[in-house]
Length: 170
Image 1 (cartoon, rainbow, N blue to C red):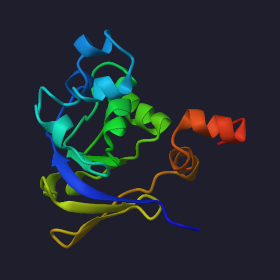
Image 2: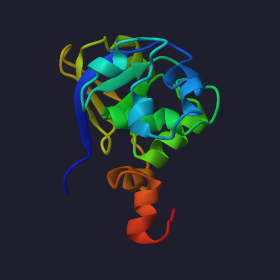
Image 3: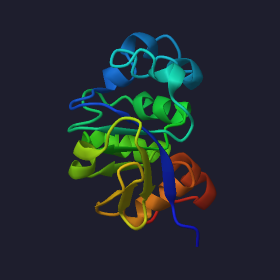
């Protein structure tokens, strides 16, 4: 079995990144087109983010990432841009579950979130619970994502899982 790994360049953000900072409501109510919305992702925190992010890049952030409203568009626009995973010290619970539901891996590891720098190259093994900072030559452990959530992530999200398997068993 091929292990579930992601690897990419890091974009770093701080604590309390809200869903409104990820994708402002002023755009969300104008369109549901994820490609259009994604062009405004993180613009209040980094105006060049959407233009410069590359497929496979990762976000590393502090505490309470995804706080605020329960808008599912927040993880969806990050996935649309090509973000392969998010590492944070902690996540707002609704964001965490919305991310899993749309097929965007999210990992809680406070030490990694503090020590990883912007532009570092990081590899995450979601099944083993390992983060490797290839730039700094450091390894971090996190609680592996439970198998039933990994199964959802592997197929691209909850909707795809239900399409493929017709149900859901914990």
